Image 1 (tube, rainbow, N blue to C red):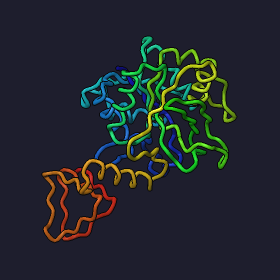
Image 2 (cartoon, rainbow, N blue to C red; image 1 turned 90 degrees about the vertical axis):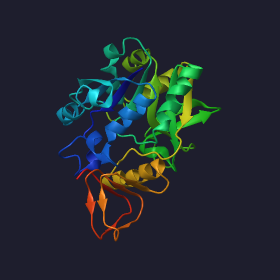
Image 3 (cartoon, one colour; image 1 turned 30 degrees about the vertical axis):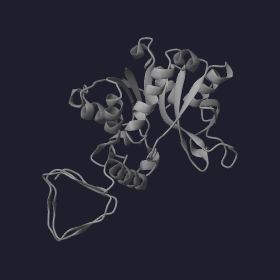
Length: 285
């Protein structure tokens, strides 16, 4: 299956971490965010990726290369100006060659099992489109998704705070039909002057197309701040090991050290008689 990652944004809310790197290269636990997406999707059968790059995109292409290090294929397309998620997706029309495809925002962190949950739902039920949702107090910062009996009835991009009567937010993992590109061309720019995929999906709903909703299992984060990167690292460590301690076999840890989970200790790290944690990730060396 082919996959698309939208990774062209500037990541302004993640500054200062994104002054010198694109947001998808911000590390979470032991690797950049985008590697979690690629490896999670690959385990669910997505082995041919297209990444839409923009802000500091050359760093992404250098880090990921052709994908062989991750046992996948990776191609790149450039979005010179950030004109919305739908406009970014449209760039990949030729790459998809008329096939349905998996799509993710480039900054969404979830337990890896959710990639298979979204893709398997599409494989078993073959709805026109599958959309993931997560529960929040108020979906004003994302897109409010209204769901009945497992299917989306309405989706509203960035509704005013306090106006939504649903707690479902667009979680940013999809399986899209090849016809989505025709709908994107019919999508009008939002008030912000951008063409957004939730607005495109709304057109499908208005024409009676079925959009299947899949609820995210476990944590969800769009890693909207440096503190969120620390928090999601902790959640991911606990999801991998309930003890909250992920320690590489090559790490050297003094018996007097105190580790308070969640903590990740990478290859070649040395810890003396120190207190480490919680929510600490020590990368290689």
